[in-house]
Image 1 (cartoon, one colour):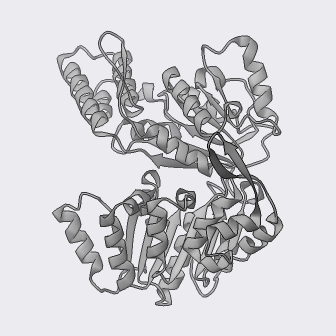
Image 2 (tube, helix red, strand yellow; image 1 turned 135 degrees about the horizontal axis):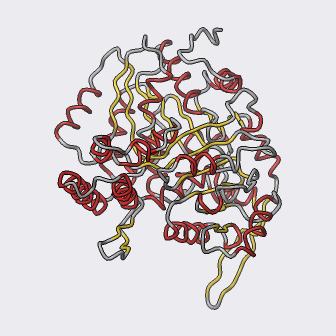
Image 3 (cartoon, rainbow, N blue to C red; image 1 turned 90 degrees about the vertical axis):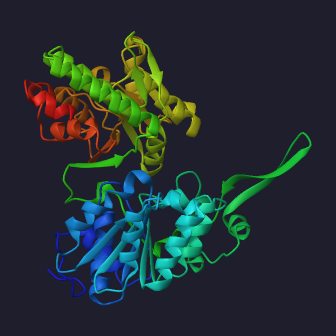
Length: 481
């Protein structure tokens, strides 16, 4: 089937086809598609369509660090081969090799150009200058993926993105929902698209129209506090004219299970510890002291433990390492609609995750389920989680404790902060949300540190391969390398 005289390279689902038809020729648009419903594909179909009309020469994609690299395989999966392309992934180091890549991209050619930049780059003058250079030279299609990252109107990166976006011919924001805490979150996201959408250039005028503000006094200080909202039907109507909303439960042709991942870069401290642990494991393997499957699996789990920000020394003491994983999880949770299950392999991580989520949301929004959770409390936690009216949004647990027998169908998002090598644990924990009683599609998100053991474990588990069955003889070396 052809839409708007465009031949799709990968066949769209019905909701993707509708979103494409509604937005392809629109200059400023919000694709509000739940996680796992394919907003990236809709965007790339639009890019392909506009490219073939000679309306776009450059695509500038801005996304969080854990998301931006995923655009490379998505481009190859959804953009037709007939559209030649050049892709450059931003690197803040600006090495000579990277400068050469940017210079090559800056040269006029018939190829469609992609510049993929992490949103954090727009907090730096260097990143802003590079983006401006490209956007002012080429007819640009600019995308802010997971646009809640610019909901803070005071943030330097928000101001920079709005300024750079003014020179783009087409602008898109992509998110499950642009409102995570308050309807006021909309202001800066819509300002990036087009200030005319909401009809306010002043935030305070916007706030005054849609919120109820009271003057508060604490000691010698007085301040305005938002205590409620009003005219939300009017605000929704304005947004709906410039957006397309898709919820997972409305996507009848989506597969029942959708898998995706978030990349988490290792810190320098993690990189050093990871390399040392890998060398130690290989040395032991060469000496014959690491010949049993059990010992190899222990080394693999220690490598993964490092990826999560922990290091166990020879005395069994656990040390913390600086890590980006908790922050990436919190960014991901901003995109989650409704309730979510978060599985983690280590109790220490479960506690850290719960603390971070409670600080970010509320004490009542988080419960944990692991080996130290009293039996008397477990059923109460499950019942509260299953109650869709309860305040409990996030259940953080260990697959061995919560992965068997329980029904947790109130969640349609399952996040693996870390994975065990045990296939049975993975299958059982996936099935807590995907079983009788689940009325929605379920999205599974793996947090993965690229180039590490994370990738190999997840690849095997998704292929339904038990890692322990692979770690025999020479296979051990392949896993550790």
